[in-house]
Image 1: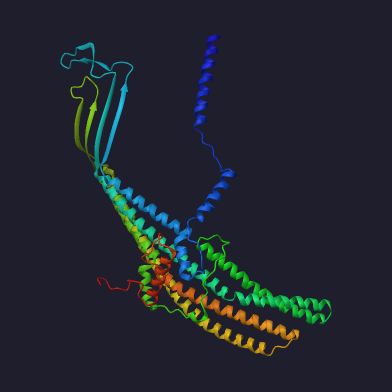
Image 2 (image 1 turned 30 degrees about the horizontal axis):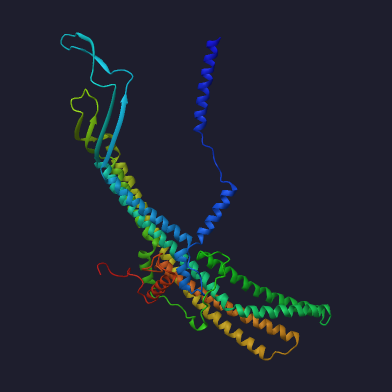
Length: 510
Protein backbone atom coordinates (compact mmCIF):
# COMPACT_ATOMS: atom_id res chain seq x y z
CA UNK A 1 0.00 0.00 0.00
CA UNK A 2 2.92 2.29 0.85
CA UNK A 3 4.51 1.47 -2.48
CA UNK A 4 1.34 2.43 -4.36
CA UNK A 5 1.10 5.63 -2.33
CA UNK A 6 4.65 6.56 -3.26
CA UNK A 7 3.91 5.89 -6.93
CA UNK A 8 0.80 8.03 -6.68
CA UNK A 9 2.77 10.83 -5.07
CA UNK A 10 5.46 10.60 -7.75
CA UNK A 11 2.83 10.64 -10.51
CA UNK A 12 1.11 13.59 -8.89
CA UNK A 13 4.39 15.45 -8.54
CA UNK A 14 5.33 14.73 -12.18
CA UNK A 15 1.90 15.83 -13.39
CA UNK A 16 2.12 19.02 -11.36
CA UNK A 17 5.55 19.76 -12.80
CA UNK A 18 4.32 19.23 -16.37
CA UNK A 19 1.26 21.42 -15.74
CA UNK A 20 3.48 24.14 -14.27
CA UNK A 21 5.75 24.06 -17.33
CA UNK A 22 2.81 24.21 -19.73
CA UNK A 23 1.29 27.07 -17.77
CA UNK A 24 4.57 28.96 -17.88
CA UNK A 25 4.70 28.59 -21.68
CA UNK A 26 1.20 30.03 -22.15
CA UNK A 27 0.93 33.68 -23.28
CA UNK A 28 -2.26 35.58 -22.55
CA UNK A 29 -3.26 38.94 -24.12
CA UNK A 30 -2.54 41.97 -21.95
CA UNK A 31 -4.64 44.95 -23.08
CA UNK A 32 -3.53 48.44 -22.19
CA UNK A 33 -5.06 49.74 -19.03
CA UNK A 34 -6.95 53.02 -18.97
CA UNK A 35 -4.12 54.69 -17.03
CA UNK A 36 -1.60 53.50 -19.61
CA UNK A 37 -3.72 54.82 -22.48
CA UNK A 38 -4.16 58.19 -20.77
CA UNK A 39 -0.44 58.45 -20.05
CA UNK A 40 0.43 57.46 -23.62
CA UNK A 41 -2.02 60.00 -25.05
CA UNK A 42 -0.56 62.76 -22.88
CA UNK A 43 3.00 61.85 -23.87
CA UNK A 44 2.10 61.70 -27.57
CA UNK A 45 0.29 65.02 -27.43
CA UNK A 46 3.31 66.67 -25.86
CA UNK A 47 5.70 65.10 -28.39
CA UNK A 48 3.47 66.03 -31.36
CA UNK A 49 3.88 69.77 -30.83
CA UNK A 50 7.30 69.89 -29.14
CA UNK A 51 10.38 71.73 -30.44
CA UNK A 52 8.56 73.92 -32.96
CA UNK A 53 9.33 77.49 -33.88
CA UNK A 54 6.64 79.76 -32.47
CA UNK A 55 4.28 81.61 -34.81
CA UNK A 56 5.00 85.26 -34.01
CA UNK A 57 3.55 87.00 -37.06
CA UNK A 58 0.95 86.45 -39.78
CA UNK A 59 2.09 83.68 -42.12
CA UNK A 60 2.79 84.13 -45.80
CA UNK A 61 2.01 81.26 -48.16
CA UNK A 62 5.70 80.29 -48.35
CA UNK A 63 6.04 80.32 -44.56
CA UNK A 64 2.96 78.12 -44.17
CA UNK A 65 4.40 75.66 -46.70
CA UNK A 66 7.74 75.74 -44.91
CA UNK A 67 6.14 74.94 -41.56
CA UNK A 68 4.22 72.06 -43.14
CA UNK A 69 7.38 70.61 -44.69
CA UNK A 70 9.26 70.90 -41.41
CA UNK A 71 6.63 69.76 -38.91
CA UNK A 72 3.84 67.89 -40.71
CA UNK A 73 3.63 64.43 -39.12
CA UNK A 74 2.74 62.65 -42.36
CA UNK A 75 5.90 64.04 -43.91
CA UNK A 76 7.88 62.97 -40.85
CA UNK A 77 6.59 59.42 -41.28
CA UNK A 78 7.89 59.28 -44.86
CA UNK A 79 11.24 60.69 -43.72
CA UNK A 80 11.52 57.99 -41.06
CA UNK A 81 10.54 55.29 -43.56
CA UNK A 82 13.25 56.54 -45.91
CA UNK A 83 15.78 56.52 -43.06
CA UNK A 84 14.72 52.96 -42.19
CA UNK A 85 15.28 51.80 -45.78
CA UNK A 86 18.70 53.46 -45.66
CA UNK A 87 19.59 51.59 -42.46
CA UNK A 88 18.47 48.31 -43.99
CA UNK A 89 20.65 49.01 -47.04
CA UNK A 90 23.60 49.59 -44.73
CA UNK A 91 23.11 46.21 -43.07
CA UNK A 92 22.43 44.32 -46.34
CA UNK A 93 26.07 44.72 -47.38
CA UNK A 94 27.13 42.68 -44.37
CA UNK A 95 25.58 39.56 -45.91
CA UNK A 96 28.10 39.71 -48.77
CA UNK A 97 31.05 39.33 -46.40
CA UNK A 98 32.52 35.92 -45.46
CA UNK A 99 31.10 34.31 -42.34
CA UNK A 100 33.53 34.13 -39.41
CA UNK A 101 32.12 31.80 -36.76
CA UNK A 102 33.57 30.48 -33.54
CA UNK A 103 32.36 27.56 -31.47
CA UNK A 104 33.32 26.29 -28.05
CA UNK A 105 31.98 23.34 -26.14
CA UNK A 106 32.50 21.06 -23.18
CA UNK A 107 31.47 17.43 -23.37
CA UNK A 108 31.41 14.73 -20.70
CA UNK A 109 30.21 11.10 -20.54
CA UNK A 110 28.98 8.86 -17.76
CA UNK A 111 31.55 6.22 -18.78
CA UNK A 112 34.58 5.85 -20.99
CA UNK A 113 34.11 5.71 -24.75
CA UNK A 114 35.83 2.30 -25.21
CA UNK A 115 35.81 -0.28 -27.98
CA UNK A 116 37.19 -3.76 -28.78
CA UNK A 117 38.96 -4.69 -32.00
CA UNK A 118 38.73 -7.59 -34.44
CA UNK A 119 41.52 -8.69 -36.75
CA UNK A 120 40.47 -8.59 -40.39
CA UNK A 121 42.94 -11.33 -41.35
CA UNK A 122 42.48 -13.84 -38.49
CA UNK A 123 39.03 -12.87 -37.29
CA UNK A 124 40.25 -12.91 -33.68
CA UNK A 125 38.51 -10.52 -31.33
CA UNK A 126 40.49 -8.69 -28.68
CA UNK A 127 38.35 -8.52 -25.56
CA UNK A 128 40.61 -5.93 -23.99
CA UNK A 129 38.78 -2.58 -24.44
CA UNK A 130 40.67 0.49 -25.59
CA UNK A 131 39.77 4.17 -25.79
CA UNK A 132 41.01 7.22 -27.68
CA UNK A 133 38.86 9.81 -25.95
CA UNK A 134 38.67 11.24 -22.47
CA UNK A 135 35.41 11.17 -20.60
CA UNK A 136 35.50 14.97 -20.42
CA UNK A 137 36.94 17.15 -23.18
CA UNK A 138 36.68 20.71 -24.45
CA UNK A 139 36.85 21.92 -28.02
CA UNK A 140 37.20 25.29 -29.72
CA UNK A 141 37.23 26.16 -33.40
CA UNK A 142 37.26 29.31 -35.52
CA UNK A 143 35.91 28.92 -39.07
CA UNK A 144 36.01 31.40 -41.95
CA UNK A 145 33.54 30.47 -44.69
CA UNK A 146 32.41 32.11 -47.89
CA UNK A 147 29.52 30.78 -49.95
CA UNK A 148 29.67 32.04 -53.53
CA UNK A 149 25.95 31.50 -54.11
CA UNK A 150 25.03 33.36 -50.92
CA UNK A 151 27.30 36.21 -52.02
CA UNK A 152 25.46 36.48 -55.32
CA UNK A 153 22.05 36.42 -53.66
CA UNK A 154 23.16 39.00 -51.09
CA UNK A 155 24.54 41.23 -53.86
CA UNK A 156 21.24 41.23 -55.74
CA UNK A 157 19.37 41.66 -52.45
CA UNK A 158 21.44 44.76 -51.70
CA UNK A 159 20.69 46.18 -55.17
CA UNK A 160 16.98 45.53 -54.60
CA UNK A 161 17.19 47.30 -51.23
CA UNK A 162 18.92 50.26 -52.90
CA UNK A 163 15.96 50.50 -55.28
CA UNK A 164 13.59 50.37 -52.30
CA UNK A 165 15.46 53.30 -50.79
CA UNK A 166 15.07 55.28 -54.01
CA UNK A 167 11.37 54.33 -54.16
CA UNK A 168 10.95 55.55 -50.56
CA UNK A 169 12.39 58.93 -51.62
CA UNK A 170 9.81 59.14 -54.41
CA UNK A 171 7.01 58.31 -51.96
CA UNK A 172 8.29 61.14 -49.77
CA UNK A 173 8.22 63.50 -52.77
CA UNK A 174 4.64 62.45 -53.51
CA UNK A 175 3.59 63.20 -49.94
CA UNK A 176 5.33 66.58 -50.12
CA UNK A 177 3.48 67.51 -53.31
CA UNK A 178 0.14 66.56 -51.73
CA UNK A 179 0.88 68.49 -48.53
CA UNK A 180 1.94 71.58 -50.47
CA UNK A 181 -1.29 71.60 -52.46
CA UNK A 182 -3.39 71.13 -49.32
CA UNK A 183 -1.55 74.02 -47.64
CA UNK A 184 -2.04 76.19 -50.71
CA UNK A 185 -5.79 75.55 -50.75
CA UNK A 186 -6.21 76.08 -46.99
CA UNK A 187 -4.03 79.22 -46.96
CA UNK A 188 -5.87 80.91 -49.80
CA UNK A 189 -9.22 79.98 -48.25
CA UNK A 190 -8.11 81.51 -44.97
CA UNK A 191 -6.57 84.56 -46.67
CA UNK A 192 -9.64 85.39 -48.74
CA UNK A 193 -11.89 84.92 -45.71
CA UNK A 194 -9.58 86.99 -43.48
CA UNK A 195 -9.63 89.87 -45.98
CA UNK A 196 -13.39 90.26 -45.55
CA UNK A 197 -13.47 89.74 -41.78
CA UNK A 198 -13.91 93.43 -40.78
CA UNK A 199 -16.64 93.99 -43.37
CA UNK A 200 -18.44 90.79 -42.38
CA UNK A 201 -18.41 91.83 -38.73
CA UNK A 202 -19.72 95.33 -39.50
CA UNK A 203 -22.56 94.19 -41.76
CA UNK A 204 -23.49 91.36 -39.40
CA UNK A 205 -23.71 93.76 -36.50
CA UNK A 206 -25.89 96.15 -38.49
CA UNK A 207 -28.14 93.30 -39.73
CA UNK A 208 -28.60 91.91 -36.22
CA UNK A 209 -29.48 95.36 -34.88
CA UNK A 210 -32.00 95.87 -37.70
CA UNK A 211 -33.48 92.43 -36.99
CA UNK A 212 -33.93 93.27 -33.32
CA UNK A 213 -35.50 96.62 -34.17
CA UNK A 214 -37.88 94.90 -36.56
CA UNK A 215 -38.98 92.46 -33.88
CA UNK A 216 -39.61 95.32 -31.47
CA UNK A 217 -41.58 97.16 -34.14
CA UNK A 218 -43.66 94.06 -34.73
CA UNK A 219 -44.39 93.67 -31.02
CA UNK A 220 -45.39 97.36 -30.79
CA UNK A 221 -47.44 97.02 -34.01
CA UNK A 222 -45.59 99.88 -35.66
CA UNK A 223 -45.49 97.88 -38.90
CA UNK A 224 -48.07 95.63 -40.55
CA UNK A 225 -47.41 92.03 -39.40
CA UNK A 226 -46.81 90.69 -42.92
CA UNK A 227 -44.37 93.47 -43.80
CA UNK A 228 -42.51 92.95 -40.53
CA UNK A 229 -42.20 89.19 -41.13
CA UNK A 230 -40.95 89.66 -44.68
CA UNK A 231 -38.47 92.23 -43.44
CA UNK A 232 -37.23 89.80 -40.74
CA UNK A 233 -37.01 86.96 -43.26
CA UNK A 234 -34.80 89.04 -45.55
CA UNK A 235 -32.56 90.02 -42.64
CA UNK A 236 -32.33 86.43 -41.40
CA UNK A 237 -31.25 85.26 -44.85
CA UNK A 238 -28.53 87.93 -44.89
CA UNK A 239 -27.38 86.97 -41.38
CA UNK A 240 -27.32 83.30 -42.37
CA UNK A 241 -25.10 84.02 -45.38
CA UNK A 242 -22.70 86.17 -43.38
CA UNK A 243 -22.48 83.67 -40.54
CA UNK A 244 -21.55 81.04 -43.14
CA UNK A 245 -18.63 83.27 -44.12
CA UNK A 246 -17.50 83.39 -40.48
CA UNK A 247 -17.68 79.59 -40.31
CA UNK A 248 -15.55 79.34 -43.47
CA UNK A 249 -12.87 81.41 -41.76
CA UNK A 250 -12.75 79.12 -38.72
CA UNK A 251 -12.66 75.93 -40.82
CA UNK A 252 -9.86 77.24 -43.07
CA UNK A 253 -7.73 78.27 -40.09
CA UNK A 254 -8.22 74.89 -38.43
CA UNK A 255 -7.24 73.02 -41.60
CA UNK A 256 -4.17 75.18 -42.04
CA UNK A 257 -3.11 74.70 -38.41
CA UNK A 258 -3.48 70.94 -38.74
CA UNK A 259 -1.32 70.82 -41.89
CA UNK A 260 1.39 72.81 -40.12
CA UNK A 261 1.16 70.47 -37.10
CA UNK A 262 -0.14 73.18 -34.80
CA UNK A 263 -2.86 72.42 -32.24
CA UNK A 264 -6.18 72.77 -34.12
CA UNK A 265 -7.39 75.48 -31.73
CA UNK A 266 -4.34 77.68 -32.45
CA UNK A 267 -5.47 81.12 -33.72
CA UNK A 268 -3.54 81.12 -37.00
CA UNK A 269 -3.22 84.47 -38.73
CA UNK A 270 -2.26 84.75 -42.39
CA UNK A 271 -0.56 87.64 -44.13
CA UNK A 272 -3.46 88.83 -46.29
CA UNK A 273 -2.26 90.08 -49.70
CA UNK A 274 -3.71 93.37 -50.93
CA UNK A 275 -5.89 93.51 -54.02
CA UNK A 276 -3.11 94.99 -56.11
CA UNK A 277 -1.09 91.80 -55.68
CA UNK A 278 -3.89 89.54 -56.97
CA UNK A 279 -2.33 88.93 -60.37
CA UNK A 280 -3.33 85.98 -62.52
CA UNK A 281 -0.62 83.27 -62.28
CA UNK A 282 0.51 82.03 -65.69
CA UNK A 283 2.23 78.67 -66.27
CA UNK A 284 5.85 79.01 -67.34
CA UNK A 285 5.61 76.07 -69.74
CA UNK A 286 3.48 75.00 -72.66
CA UNK A 287 1.17 72.03 -72.30
CA UNK A 288 3.49 69.86 -74.41
CA UNK A 289 6.45 70.78 -72.20
CA UNK A 290 4.47 69.99 -69.05
CA UNK A 291 3.57 66.57 -70.45
CA UNK A 292 7.23 65.83 -71.17
CA UNK A 293 8.28 67.03 -67.71
CA UNK A 294 5.60 64.98 -65.95
CA UNK A 295 6.72 61.81 -67.73
CA UNK A 296 10.12 62.25 -66.06
CA UNK A 297 9.54 64.19 -62.85
CA UNK A 298 6.40 62.63 -61.37
CA UNK A 299 7.32 60.64 -58.25
CA UNK A 300 4.79 57.90 -59.07
CA UNK A 301 6.52 57.26 -62.42
CA UNK A 302 9.96 57.13 -60.84
CA UNK A 303 8.77 54.85 -58.05
CA UNK A 304 7.25 52.48 -60.59
CA UNK A 305 10.55 52.43 -62.49
CA UNK A 306 12.39 51.30 -59.35
CA UNK A 307 9.74 48.65 -58.72
CA UNK A 308 10.28 47.40 -62.29
CA UNK A 309 14.01 47.20 -61.59
CA UNK A 310 13.33 44.95 -58.63
CA UNK A 311 11.10 42.73 -60.77
CA UNK A 312 14.12 42.02 -63.01
CA UNK A 313 16.37 41.51 -59.97
CA UNK A 314 13.91 39.05 -58.48
CA UNK A 315 14.09 36.97 -61.67
CA UNK A 316 17.91 36.94 -61.55
CA UNK A 317 17.84 35.86 -57.92
CA UNK A 318 15.45 33.02 -58.72
CA UNK A 319 17.71 31.80 -61.53
CA UNK A 320 20.80 32.16 -59.37
CA UNK A 321 19.31 29.82 -56.77
CA UNK A 322 19.31 27.04 -59.40
CA UNK A 323 23.11 27.15 -59.79
CA UNK A 324 25.50 24.98 -57.75
CA UNK A 325 26.63 26.41 -54.45
CA UNK A 326 30.34 26.46 -53.64
CA UNK A 327 31.58 27.15 -50.12
CA UNK A 328 35.20 28.03 -49.41
CA UNK A 329 36.27 27.53 -45.82
CA UNK A 330 39.35 27.71 -43.61
CA UNK A 331 39.61 27.35 -39.85
CA UNK A 332 41.59 26.85 -36.69
CA UNK A 333 40.65 24.03 -34.30
CA UNK A 334 41.57 22.91 -30.80
CA UNK A 335 40.54 19.84 -28.77
CA UNK A 336 41.68 19.16 -25.19
CA UNK A 337 41.53 15.37 -25.61
CA UNK A 338 44.90 14.10 -24.29
CA UNK A 339 44.69 10.98 -26.44
CA UNK A 340 45.10 13.07 -29.61
CA UNK A 341 48.60 13.45 -31.01
CA UNK A 342 47.75 16.95 -32.31
CA UNK A 343 45.44 18.93 -30.12
CA UNK A 344 45.31 21.93 -32.46
CA UNK A 345 45.23 22.06 -36.24
CA UNK A 346 44.15 24.15 -39.21
CA UNK A 347 42.01 23.02 -42.09
CA UNK A 348 40.76 24.47 -45.38
CA UNK A 349 38.78 23.27 -48.32
CA UNK A 350 35.90 23.77 -50.72
CA UNK A 351 32.50 22.16 -50.77
CA UNK A 352 30.16 22.11 -53.77
CA UNK A 353 26.50 21.15 -53.69
CA UNK A 354 23.93 21.19 -56.47
CA UNK A 355 20.39 19.97 -56.72
CA UNK A 356 20.41 18.67 -60.29
CA UNK A 357 16.62 18.68 -60.46
CA UNK A 358 16.68 22.47 -60.25
CA UNK A 359 17.64 22.58 -63.92
CA UNK A 360 14.12 21.41 -64.76
CA UNK A 361 12.70 24.65 -63.34
CA UNK A 362 14.94 27.00 -65.33
CA UNK A 363 12.56 27.64 -68.23
CA UNK A 364 9.54 28.09 -65.93
CA UNK A 365 11.37 30.66 -63.81
CA UNK A 366 12.47 32.51 -66.94
CA UNK A 367 8.90 32.59 -68.20
CA UNK A 368 7.60 33.81 -64.85
CA UNK A 369 10.31 36.49 -64.78
CA UNK A 370 9.43 37.69 -68.26
CA UNK A 371 5.75 37.86 -67.29
CA UNK A 372 6.62 39.79 -64.14
CA UNK A 373 8.69 42.31 -66.08
CA UNK A 374 5.95 42.64 -68.70
CA UNK A 375 3.38 43.40 -66.00
CA UNK A 376 5.71 46.05 -64.55
CA UNK A 377 6.16 47.57 -68.02
CA UNK A 378 2.41 47.73 -68.72
CA UNK A 379 1.75 49.12 -65.24
CA UNK A 380 4.33 51.83 -65.85
CA UNK A 381 2.74 52.71 -69.20
CA UNK A 382 -0.71 52.85 -67.60
CA UNK A 383 0.66 55.15 -64.92
CA UNK A 384 2.22 57.42 -67.52
CA UNK A 385 -1.15 57.59 -69.28
CA UNK A 386 -2.81 58.62 -66.04
CA UNK A 387 -0.11 61.26 -65.51
CA UNK A 388 -0.70 62.72 -68.97
CA UNK A 389 -4.44 62.88 -68.25
CA UNK A 390 -3.81 64.67 -64.95
CA UNK A 391 -1.58 67.25 -66.64
CA UNK A 392 -4.22 67.98 -69.25
CA UNK A 393 -7.00 68.17 -66.66
CA UNK A 394 -4.94 70.58 -64.54
CA UNK A 395 -4.23 72.71 -67.61
CA UNK A 396 -7.93 72.96 -68.53
CA UNK A 397 -8.85 73.55 -64.89
CA UNK A 398 -6.51 76.54 -64.83
CA UNK A 399 -8.01 77.95 -68.03
CA UNK A 400 -11.53 77.53 -66.67
CA UNK A 401 -10.56 79.08 -63.31
CA UNK A 402 -9.09 82.08 -65.13
CA UNK A 403 -12.34 82.64 -67.03
CA UNK A 404 -14.43 82.29 -63.87
CA UNK A 405 -12.22 84.75 -62.02
CA UNK A 406 -12.74 87.34 -64.77
CA UNK A 407 -16.51 86.86 -64.55
CA UNK A 408 -16.63 87.10 -60.76
CA UNK A 409 -14.37 90.15 -60.79
CA UNK A 410 -16.77 91.86 -63.20
CA UNK A 411 -19.76 90.85 -61.06
CA UNK A 412 -18.07 92.15 -57.91
CA UNK A 413 -17.41 95.48 -59.59
CA UNK A 414 -21.09 95.78 -60.56
CA UNK A 415 -22.30 94.86 -57.06
CA UNK A 416 -19.97 97.44 -55.52
CA UNK A 417 -21.32 100.16 -57.81
CA UNK A 418 -24.89 99.14 -56.91
CA UNK A 419 -24.04 99.37 -53.22
CA UNK A 420 -22.53 102.82 -53.68
CA UNK A 421 -25.63 104.02 -55.54
CA UNK A 422 -28.01 102.72 -52.84
CA UNK A 423 -25.87 104.10 -50.00
CA UNK A 424 -25.80 107.52 -51.63
CA UNK A 425 -29.59 107.63 -51.95
CA UNK A 426 -30.33 106.05 -48.57
CA UNK A 427 -32.96 107.66 -46.31
CA UNK A 428 -33.92 106.84 -42.75
CA UNK A 429 -36.94 104.64 -43.41
CA UNK A 430 -36.76 100.90 -42.64
CA UNK A 431 -37.23 99.73 -46.24
CA UNK A 432 -34.27 101.81 -47.44
CA UNK A 433 -32.23 100.54 -44.53
CA UNK A 434 -33.03 96.95 -45.54
CA UNK A 435 -32.01 97.69 -49.11
CA UNK A 436 -28.78 99.26 -47.89
CA UNK A 437 -27.96 96.18 -45.77
CA UNK A 438 -28.97 93.85 -48.56
CA UNK A 439 -26.85 95.67 -51.14
CA UNK A 440 -23.89 95.72 -48.76
CA UNK A 441 -24.26 92.00 -48.11
CA UNK A 442 -24.62 91.28 -51.85
CA UNK A 443 -21.47 93.28 -52.57
CA UNK A 444 -19.66 91.46 -49.81
CA UNK A 445 -20.79 88.06 -51.09
CA UNK A 446 -19.76 89.04 -54.62
CA UNK A 447 -16.34 90.02 -53.33
CA UNK A 448 -16.15 86.72 -51.47
CA UNK A 449 -17.07 84.85 -54.65
CA UNK A 450 -14.42 86.78 -56.56
CA UNK A 451 -11.77 86.02 -53.93
CA UNK A 452 -12.75 82.35 -53.92
CA UNK A 453 -12.47 82.32 -57.69
CA UNK A 454 -8.97 83.75 -57.34
CA UNK A 455 -8.15 81.10 -54.71
CA UNK A 456 -9.36 78.44 -57.15
CA UNK A 457 -7.16 80.02 -59.81
CA UNK A 458 -4.14 79.74 -57.49
CA UNK A 459 -5.08 76.16 -56.64
CA UNK A 460 -5.40 75.32 -60.34
CA UNK A 461 -1.96 76.80 -60.97
CA UNK A 462 -0.61 74.69 -58.10
CA UNK A 463 -2.35 71.64 -59.55
CA UNK A 464 -0.41 72.15 -62.79
CA UNK A 465 2.86 72.17 -60.85
CA UNK A 466 1.81 69.11 -58.89
CA UNK A 467 0.72 67.23 -62.00
CA UNK A 468 4.07 68.02 -63.63
CA UNK A 469 5.94 66.80 -60.55
CA UNK A 470 7.80 70.04 -59.74
CA UNK A 471 9.48 69.85 -56.35
CA UNK A 472 8.36 72.83 -54.23
CA UNK A 473 11.78 73.28 -52.65
CA UNK A 474 15.40 72.53 -53.45
CA UNK A 475 18.55 72.73 -51.34
CA UNK A 476 16.75 72.96 -48.01
CA UNK A 477 16.38 70.26 -45.39
CA UNK A 478 14.29 69.67 -42.31
CA UNK A 479 17.07 71.06 -40.10
CA UNK A 480 16.82 74.53 -41.65
CA UNK A 481 14.75 77.20 -39.98
CA UNK A 482 11.35 78.27 -41.30
CA UNK A 483 12.58 81.42 -42.99
CA UNK A 484 15.34 79.56 -44.87
CA UNK A 485 12.89 76.95 -46.15
CA UNK A 486 10.37 79.66 -47.07
CA UNK A 487 13.03 81.53 -49.10
CA UNK A 488 13.95 78.29 -50.87
CA UNK A 489 10.27 77.67 -51.70
CA UNK A 490 9.93 81.19 -53.08
CA UNK A 491 13.09 80.82 -55.16
CA UNK A 492 11.89 77.53 -56.62
CA UNK A 493 8.47 79.05 -57.39
CA UNK A 494 10.19 81.84 -59.34
CA UNK A 495 12.18 79.29 -61.36
CA UNK A 496 9.05 77.30 -62.17
CA UNK A 497 7.11 80.41 -63.22
CA UNK A 498 9.94 81.52 -65.52
CA UNK A 499 10.25 78.09 -67.13
CA UNK A 500 13.54 77.10 -65.46
CA UNK A 501 12.27 74.67 -62.86
CA UNK A 502 13.15 71.38 -64.52
CA UNK A 503 15.99 69.74 -66.47
CA UNK A 504 13.66 67.15 -68.01
CA UNK A 505 13.46 69.10 -71.27
CA UNK A 506 17.18 68.82 -71.89
CA UNK A 507 18.14 66.59 -74.79
CA UNK A 508 20.15 63.46 -73.95
CA UNK A 509 23.84 64.21 -73.64
CA UNK A 510 23.39 67.95 -73.28
